[in-house]
Image (cartoon, rainbow, N blue to C red; front, side, top):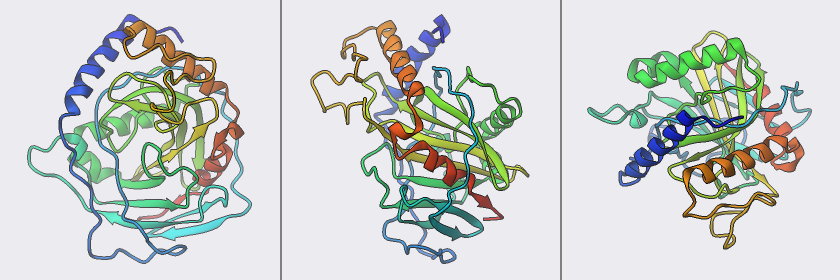
Length: 309
């Protein structure tokens, strides 16, 4: 995919806005003391967490062709508050869940606004130091749209995306909740249905400034809507791949295998070329080159059923 002049401008603006945002603290999300309906499977051990929120983004890289994925043949069935899915044994031993309370303080930035939603944290997930905890979140669309104009725009963008299903989306793939960083690229794009809805999965990187692409930052995400448009499902699941460095401190020159990191003092065009090359390499990787295997993550999301959580 050719990087246009507009992409360069967006990248520069993103870096300026995001670096300014780094000086602000994001209020933590807490789980209410009143216990929600008891979950089956594994009992809670840790409180769910959420990532920071909101800004514009820049996509790159053409996806692989969509492939059908069968539901997992075996695993642990998890059920909570009208949400049910099967967790493959290679993905997690179980999960814990809770209700995250609504947040809408006066004059709060949009990334700090959310309705009450369900958050599910996977237990014993293979990657413990990724972009966020391995989690699935389910948001009531009507309440979210009423509270946040940007959320309403994201819902419309997702509806259009799922109606058209372009093989290589040019624009940012819409994500909720809002994240306080830019979508640098989206790779491994596939459209997957679940029991009563549809969505799109991809491997992505969000960043607040330029830097190396590492296993600590990339993640698999699934974003979709129930067929009746009542609920938005959002999964953030860290993934690793052998050709990426573990983190920015892993080496003096944290290159991605044969894709050299241009250095911290590189110019915008050099970073664009670097991100494009890494995105292309991620896009060409097979599902089983990732940990966890993308096929297992796909199967888990396709087994999902959401009924009035």
